[in-house]
Length: 60
Image 1: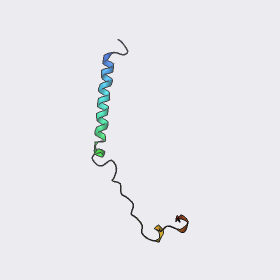
Image 2: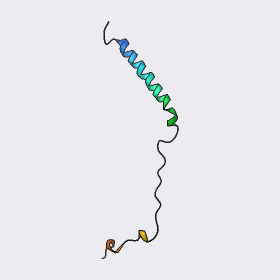
Image 3: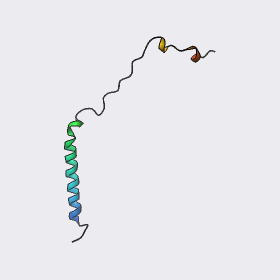
Image 4: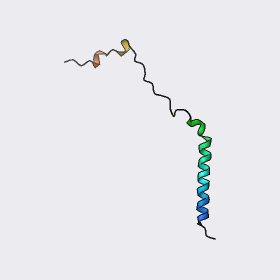
């Protein structure tokens, strides 16, 4: 009996495939929706808070 026989590799392969299928089946419900919600831009504020102050005005 050899330590690294083809049967060992075949059994590891079957175990890997079955484990991957079990994990995919357990997470299948969370794959139905979007991965992340759609991005939304912030609303612009209009008013005196957006007006430039005298220190930031570039005079020619």
